[in-house]
Every structure is written in C-alpha cells, then in structure tokens.
Length: 125
Length: 175
Ligand SMILES: [Zn+2]
Image (tube, rainbow over all chains, first blue to last red; front, side, top):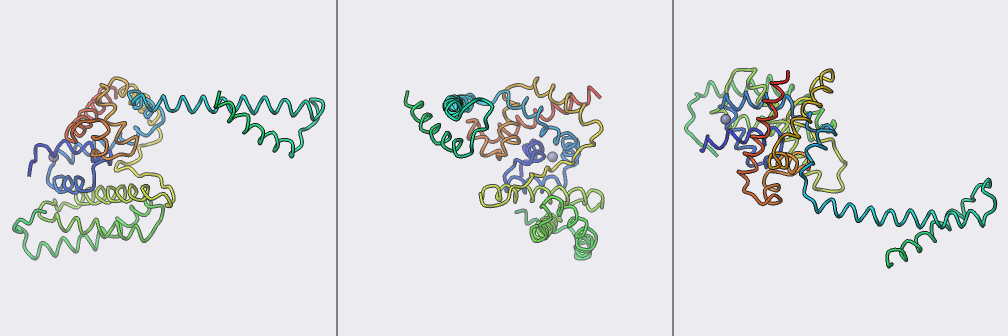
C-alpha cells in the first residue's frame, strides 16, 4: 500500500469527488493516519463555503471557453425571439384598438403563434 | 482488500461489534436521516453499509469512541454522496440537495468567511482553481475531471490538495 500517495486524497475525499473505490481505499488509510484525520477536520471546516454563489463564481473564472460561446449563441436566438414577438404584439395591439384597451386573450394566443413563425423566418436570415 | 492476520482477539472483535451496533447504530441513523431527505430505507442501507465498512477495517480502526464516531459519520456521509451521485444519474429520481462530507458552518461568521474565501480563490492558479471547479462545483469525480482536463487522475488529486492547502493557510492567516 502506497501510504505516500494516499495523503493527497484527503482533499478530494473532503470534497466528495473521489470515486467509490478510491474513497473506500482512502477510508482504510484514514482509519490509521492521524495526519489525514487532522487535515480532514481542517479542510471540512471551510469546504461548505465553496458552495456559496460568490465562491462558485470565483471558481468558474477559469472555466473553459466553448461553454460561453454556446451560451452566447443561445442568447442571440432568444433575443431574436423577443424582438419578433414584440414586433408582432405591437401590430396586434394597434389592430385591437387604442393603447388603453386591454388585449384579449385570444389575440395574445394568436400573436404567440405568429411570433413563432416570425422567429423561424428570423433564423433563416 | 487487506486480509492481514487479525491482531485483535475474539474478545476485542466482540467488543467492537457491541460498540458499533449498540452505541453507534442509532446515532448514525439519525445523522444519516437528515442527509437522505428522510428516506428511511435508504438511511437503513447507508447505516448497514457503514457498519460493515467499519467491521472490514477493524484491523486499522482506532477504538477510541470519539475517533470512531468521527470516522463512522464521515464514511456514512461519503456513502450518501455516492448514492446521491447515482440517483442524479437516473433522471426520474427527485432532485436532492447534495450533502457535504463537511458540516455546515456557523451562520454568524459565514458572510465574512465567504468574502475571504472568494478572495483567496481569485488568487489561486488557474490549474488549482479549475481542479475544484471541474470536480466539486460541477459534481464530477476526479476520474471524470481528469478526462475533461486531459491530465492524469493523480495530477487532479494533487492540484486539489494544494488548492485546499492554500485556502486553509490563507484563512488561518486572516483570522
Ligand atoms: Zn494520511
């Protein structure tokens, strides 16, 4: 048993990210290693703080780029939808009468339907 | 599994069994119940597995009650986390709040500590920070994160260790 390499596992263990087999191996080591018992207690005193939103945000600073690109293109498509729906709604509203009059539910439904068509056209452009 | 010759005698084995099932079974049950969303069957399974693990490690285990209690509840939490992970993998299961091996800290000085820890995280190297992010934050195991990061498992483990070390030292320095 390589005791030397096992000590390092304490961090992954506290974070709960060791696979099952590794974790069981470490527990065997933990049962008789005073150093790891001590570090386990020290590490776990602050581990829950890593879950705080601001800590998570700081941790994601070095997250890989491709994820951001995908998110951005989704945002573009979403923005397209909003623009299309807003345009259609304003047309429907002017057809329905003055600005003070409430838009009926049925016309909103219709608007939603048209908005969808508009949006798919939008994507082809 | 280490099938070393038992240094302990039959008497000591019996003593450990009495300790485990007499003293710790109920304590574990109530501890684990909070972590499993009060799922009694799951809790029962976790407690049994924990006690079996203790029995399998009886050659190594320190019999001092405080130490034994610490080891048992740590192992029980880990088993819940493993169970949680496999439940998450099955989409039809209800979403659970993932437990930590760690305890929840006191609310009082939490705000300050969060500020300090956020500051420390920003000062970590990219390698150390992404090791925590790809494992703990995204809920991946070391093995899975190693594939994503394109480094050996041992590298992820030692980055995590160094990162946690740095955070601990920084927190100690500022308090
Ligand atoms: Zn150790």
